[in-house]
Amino acid sequence: MDFKRVSYLVGCFVFGLVGLFTGVKGEDVLHKSKEYSAIYNFGDSNSDTGTFSAAFTMVYPPNGESFPGNLPTRNCDGRLIIDFVTEELKLPYLSAYLDSIGSNYNYGANFAAGGSSIRQTNFSPISFGLQISQFTHFKSRTRASYNQSSHSSYRLPKSMDFSNALYTIDIGQNDLSFGFMTSDPQSVISTIPDILSQFSLGLQQLYNEGARLFWIHNTGPIGCLPRTSMKSKPRPEDLDYTGCRKIENEIAQEFNKQLKDIVFETRKELPTAKFTYVDVYSAKYELIKNARNQGFVNPKKFCCGTTNVVHIDCGKKKIKNGKEEYYKCKHPSKYINWDGVHYSEAANRWLALLILNGSFSDPPVPIGMVGN
Ligand SMILES: *[C@@H]1O[C@H](CO)[C@@H](O)[C@H](O)[C@H]1NC(C)=O
Ligand SMILES: *[C@@H]1O[C@H](CO)[C@@H](O)[C@H](O)[C@H]1NC(C)=O
Image 1: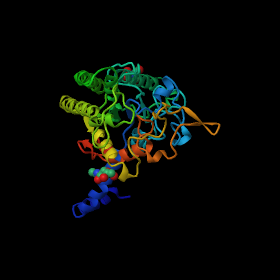
Image 2 (image 1 turned 180 degrees about the vertical axis):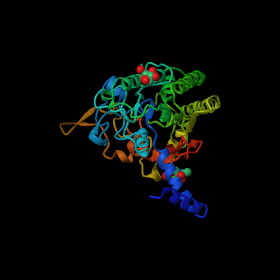
Image 3 (image 1 turned 135 degrees about the vertical axis):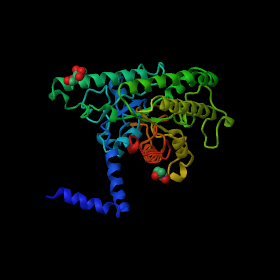
Image 4 (image 1 turned 30 degrees about the vertical axis):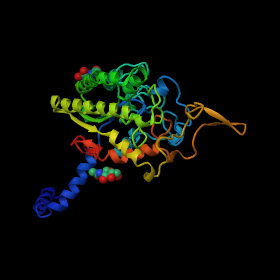
C-alpha cells in the first residue's frame, strides 16, 4: 500500500474540503475527549453509590427499586446524577471505595458518603478531607499493586494516569444543614469562609496527587427540600412564590457565591488544572419552578415516607389490609423528590440532561470536554 501517496493526495484535498474535514475531525475529538481514564467522585448522599450502606448501615428498600438489580445502595429510587455522568461518558457505574463486595475500580471509584460534609460534623465521621485521604491511599495501593503483580490488579484502575481522570465533587449541603440544625442563620453564614477554606485545601491536595480535571457542583436550593433541617416552622412570609424557604436558599446562594470565588482563585493558582464550576442550584431551582409543566406533581411532595401527622422514614413499612408494605407513592417518576431530602431518578435524569452539556457551567463546556 502506497501510504505516502495516499496521504499526499488526502493532503491535496484537505484545503478544498475544509468544511467536510472539520466535521469529521470534530466528531473524532468529541469521541476522544470522552475517554477519561477514570472518574473519581467526592461528596455526600447526592452522589453516594454505596459508601454509606457499606460502612454504616444498609440503605433499605424501596431505595433502589428502579435501579438495575434493585440495589438499595443509593438514597433514591434509581439513578443519581453521578450515574448519568458515567452513562454520558460511556463508563460503568462507580463502585464505592469502601464496598468490598463486587466492586470494580477499572474506571474510577466513588468516595462520596451519605452524611459527609466539608468540615467534620456529627452527621458522619467521613469528611471531605477523609475522602481525600482514602483516595490517596487508593492511589498508592493501586500503584504498589501494579508494581508487584499484574494478577492482583484486575479490578484496579486500568490506567495509572491519574491526571487524565475526571474529578467530580458535590459537597457542602450537609455543612449548611448541620448549621441550620444547631445554630441560627447568621451563625451559619459566618461559618462559610472556614468551610470553604477547607474545601480549597482539599482541591489543592487532590492537585498534589495529580488531579487536573475538575467538575465541581455547587450546592442545591436546600430551602426547597420538602423536609427541612431548620428548627422553627416557616411562616407564609418565610416562603418564596415556589414554596421554598427563603432564608435557607439565601444562605445556599451565599455559600455558592463564595464557592465560585474559591474555584476561580484556585484556577489562577493552579493554571495547569481545569476547573469547571457547575451551577446545580439554578438547574434544581429551574426544575422546581417548572415542576407542573414538566409533568411532575407539587414539588413540596415526596414519594417515600411521610411527615403527615405521623413521621415515617423512607424504608419503613405500614400495615395495609393486614399486610406490611413500604410507605411509598405509586408513581415515583412523577415526583421531583424521593424521600423528602433526596431527588428522584426522574428529577436526576432531568437535571443531568440540563447540566451535562455545559449550559449551567463556567466555562460552558460539556462534561466530555473538560480536558480539551
Ligand atoms: C513502582 O515502580 C516504579 C518504577 O519501577 C517506581 O518508580 C515506583 O516507586 C514504584 N512504586 C511503588 C508504590 O512501589
Ligand atoms: C443543553 O440541554 C438542555 C436540555 O436538553 C437544552 O435546553 C439546552 O439548549 C442545551 N444547551 C446546549 C448549550 O446545548
